[in-house]
Each structure stands twice: as structure tokens, then as C-alpha cells.
Length: 265
Image (cartoon, rainbow, N blue to C red):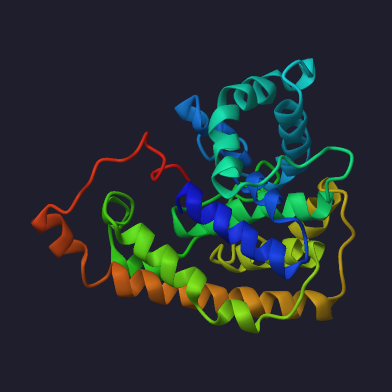
């Protein structure tokens, strides 16, 4: 999805976990691999890099002079992206999360939510490099075909986002911890891999995040919510894209992007 949808989705999950909403900024941290284009979605879009990239990003955003030679690429990219990232905080009148007080589990949930939501954009490698296989909304894509031009270059993305976050799904959900949501998103990404990603990958992935694996009951409840969320988002894709894509292309509803933001995933 686009950047705004990533931020709003993370904000919804943070509310479910009773965590500071400004941590939704970290849902944009995987985007540091947009440049060079050869790294896009293949460097930072993985749960195994989430912790180090999250901590690096927060430090760079807090202090222009902070440096870490071991992660020079990440430091440089966060410096380059800093104005764009902070613009999302300014638009919501949010403050920058502080390193000393940040809820790290919630911050990591925001980061992982980007990787999870990207399974609607294209096949994602959420557990690279430990597992090279992809997760994605395969059945949905078979139904709606070549949807990306229509979704990202017309008002459809705004209409879809508005309906998604106005849905009563969000008013019915029970509270879940950030760690439970992270583990549940991993389970769902395994389920979306056409049987290629075994759930045994989740334990080392949680360990890389320095999080304890949770009980099956906690995860089952969070997974049930995510499945309902996926059903809602899938139906919205079908509603807005399956019957309209050809018509949209023919009637030339396409609009230029604002600085390419909408197409950023």
C-alpha cells in the first residue's frame, strides 16, 4: 500500500496495543531501501533487520550528528529521508519518539506492519535472508489482475483507505499486546506463502527482535483479528478494482503523483 495507508494501519494497531500513536512513523522505516532501486523491498523489508534499522532510524532522526560506521548505509538513508519522514509527524501534530522512553515492542510492531501490509502490493520476502520464499495475496491478484496502475494513480487508493479505516472491524477488536500482534503477523505471512515458509522460522525471527514467543492462545486471538482484517481489505480491493480497472484505464482518470509519494510502498 502507499505511505499514508502504512502510517494509518500502524496507528490502528498501536491503538489496539495501547501504545503511542507517533510510533506509526516506524512503519515507514522499511522504505530506506527505496534507493538504490536495486535494493527496493529486498534489503529493509524483512523482520530480521527490523530491530537494528528501527534503532538506527530513531537515533538518526533524533540527532543529526549521530553515526554508526557499521550501518553506514542505514545512517545515510535515514539522513536523506529525514525531512519526508518527519513530515508525517508534522501533518498529525505528533512528536518524535524519544530513544530513552520509546516502547520498543510497539515500535517493532509498527515496522513489521509495513512488511505484512506489503503482501497486498507484491510478493514479499518477510524472512529474508533466512528464508527466500515470498508471501502474498495470490488468490486476490488472480481475481483483480494488473491492479497497481489503477490503485496508485487514481483516487481509488484514497477511497479504499477511507473505507478500510472507517470499518466497524476496528471498534470490535479486543486489545492485543504489540508482541502478540508481531508474532501473529508472522504467522499470517507464513500462511500466505503457498506453503513455502514454515512457521518454524518465527522463533528465530522473534529472537532477532529480542522478543519472547507467546502462548498459542494469545497468537490465535491476534491471528483471528488479522484474518478478519485481510477479509475486509480483500473485499475492498475487489469492490474498487475488479469491476473498475478496465473502465478507469479507458476513461483516463489517471492523475500525477505528488512527489511520487503514493507509489511508495
